[in-house]
Length: 139
Image (cartoon, rainbow, N blue to C red; front, side, top):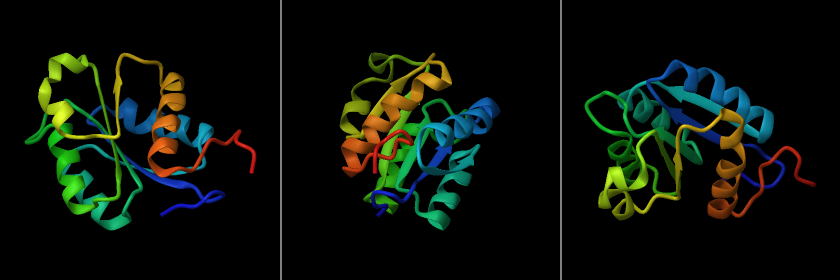
């Protein structure tokens, strides 16, 4: 597990190239983080097995064989200590009770400017791991 002073390893899974290109840049600018990406759930699982991220952030609608929620549930089975965060253009109530049953660490509702995702993302990570990875945090 990452310690204060270290960065946090984040995996982003999204089929939208904007999210896999621009969001990592914004995260790296705001957090001490190593960010890896995947554009399909299958690729996300392979990357997760290889790099063992502390945090997995997935879009809900991946237009693939599984949803982001399915992916995060599989991540929980394979990497039980990983912080799992879902983001979606669907409102929480549209995803349904399965979202609550999944016991995720966080849910971020889009649309949201990429810069606006950093503070809630940092709060979720800090709450789950007990370490503040914000670049502006005092050491």
